[in-house]
Structure formats: structure tokens, C-alpha cells
Length: 271
Image (cartoon, rainbow, N blue to C red; front, side, top):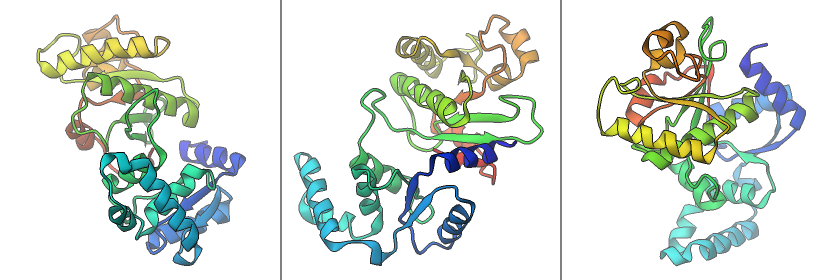
């Protein structure tokens, strides 16, 4: 069974309600049709007639109360709620739906800001980042061609602590969504001191922090990608690596390298 099918079946068994706020995007309309037809989830398609004016006003006031200490005025809040994204995020916050999917007609920063402002941030991890599930057909590397890439969409140049937190989030997604034992590689242009530089020092610091935060995780760095995912190369470049060239979670040092590596396809998903 392929990875996408496994994820869909897992979703079917949980029967969650997902809100789709981008009601006028043709791709979202088609996605809603497929989700309902296949029973992947219960869909709340947030068309304008489903927005309750009284609820909207309540959400505006609640949002304002949460953020007024940051010098956010009520007119700015009303402007944010002039479209459906923030209304959907507040519904998710309140537990009226289990999750929100957006990004077809909104930018990544728009969706990220709405999610952070309305849902908040995990106090344990302290940051928001993205994880991409990459499925490479007929590939012996990773987990039979399945990888987690992080962070490919949120933090342009993460510091050491942010890198460690990104790795923790990505590992948790690998466990919860894919039921995998994460084997994490902190990627670099260097493998264990083969080069020098500030970014390599940052990765070394991140590795130390990660081991403090989650000592049970299987992780190594700094590693070039071939030493991270190709066992034969790992034996040559770093034979003592605990992941032995079998990484399935790849943590990129910054957004440039992550986006250059990431190629969108029908077999990728973003979290």
C-alpha cells in the first residue's frame, strides 16, 4: 500500500471535520468533492452563507482581546476578518472543527499568520515550522522512498534552537502520520568536520540542544545528503554515524537549500 493511501485510510478511520475556507477556488471545490466522495473526512466548505454574523462579531472581539496588548486596534482586526481565513481559524481554535486546510488562494505567510494568531504555538516547541512528506517512486533510500523534509516553508534562517525544534516537530509528524521511527539527519555542506563555517557551528549547537530536548531520538549531523541517505557513502564518509546513511527525516540548515531541494509533485504533502 502506498503512503498516500495509508494516510487517507488513517484519516477515514478517524472521521475528523475539516474546514475549507477558500470556497471560490476551483481546486478546493474539487478537493472537497473528492474528500466527501471517498469518505476521507467530514468537510465544512465555508461559503459566505455559512458565516454567522453574530459568531463573526464574537470572534472579532475575542481575537481583539487576545492581541490588544500588542497594539492591535479593532479596525485592523475587522479587516483581517473581512475574508473567511480568520473565521475558519477561530472555529478551529474553538473546537467546532478538527482542522483547517488553506493555501490554495492564500500565501503561505497568510495562512501561517492566521494559524499562529488564532491557534497559538505549542509552548513546548515554541516555534511554527513546516514538514513536507516526500514520496520518491522506486527509491531504496529513506523509508523505501519516503522522506520528511523540514523546514521548507516558514523560517528563512533558523538559529540553533529553532533547528532543534524543527527536528522535534518533524520527528513527531513522522511518528503520528506515517507511523515511522524517525532517523534524523541535520544536513550541511560538510560531513563531521570536512569543512568549516558558521552554519556548521550552528548545526553542531542544534544537535546538542536536540539531544537535550529529545534524548531518545535517533539523530546525527552535520551530514552531507549523500552521507545521510546512502549507506554505502556513509560507510566511507562517516562509518560511526548512528543513522548509518538511512535517514528518513532531513533537516535543512535554511530555507534556500530546502526550497531548492523540494520539487512539488502529486506525491508530496505539506504539514
